Length: 393
Ligand SMILES: C[S@@+](CC[C@H](N)C(=O)[O-])C[C@H]1O[C@@H](n2cnc3c(N)ncnc32)[C@H](O)[C@@H]1O
Ligand code: SF4
Image (cartoon, rainbow, N blue to C red; front, side, top):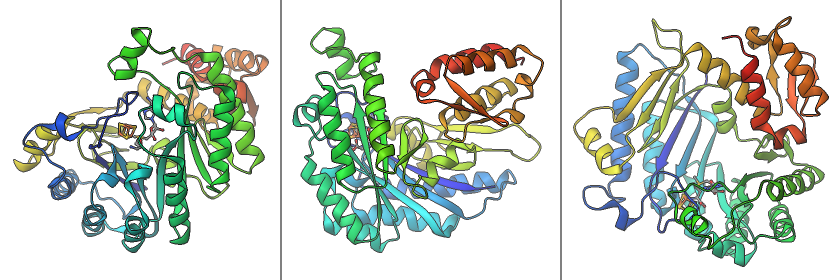
């Protein structure tokens, strides 16, 4: 079994109006939780999780990847990230050649910071670029410029780190040409990995409230579909293949960490709100998931009192297992392996549904695998809904 470690860093300098991640600014946090002691608290959680694993007969191999996500991990001094990474090496071990990534807001890192990451063994940085267009960045409340992204990617290149950039499409007021500029801006950086996400708007965010009040236009499905196709054709023309609905890479530059999640490997998630996953625990063949307490203060109290800071756990049911297999398979270029789905196999209604999806141009069937077409990637929810209805579980 492969094992990965995710560390969530739940802090941002300022909250972007569209963002619904578990992250806090200094004024949100209040007393009792701080950035200053975060690394040491996270290391304490790692030890508690390791003790829990041992007590439950779970013995994991060295981690094949480590990912620091947020929030803004690079709001912390590089030495704090290094302290947490060293603890992971000491507690679980990290494979030689492992992928070690941090997310970075482009205006929180400079050459010295990136050089320090390289010295400590980081191999990859994922920059939150979002757009090159100033009015789009403003609507998204972003504080960085494209110059920050260029400086970061160049420094990462010089220091031997791989770079990826995140983009967002569908921002209110973004014209198709604005989006083309952002896609080309990402390609001009020479990065070999890009993630592009359709803007999602949660009603409880500042942007959600502005949209509800009519102050901003609501993202439009047709506009987002057009932008997805613009991105997919530009990235593939530049040699970056899609390997997951929102991710494109030159072959060999895919994110190993994310592929691990999609292949249901084991991972320990550390930090407020982080999820963990164990494919089997002795005596129970079904997969186990846990999720950490969301608020840093309550999370910190649990860690300080020596309790694994989990809000909850669940064993995945057979139905959930099959549904997740369908959802994951339909997001990946490698597609859905039908032999994993006896409930869809042959002579049931499932085969009719597959034929219909194929006739509608949403999937192609190659041997034992069904793979979403570009149109299918755009209508992924429809495919999944129709497959779920055909499941016999
Ligand atoms: C967890 S965030 C952290 C990255 C980093 N803090 C930053 O913003 O630069 C990772 C990525 O999720 C994407 N994201 C966050 N909120 C989103 C939303 N509401 N809709 C679409 N993408 C979103 C952004 O592209 C962001 O770079
Ligand atoms: S998008 Fe990134 S920087 Fe903005 S609030 Fe969310 S985690 Fe923080």
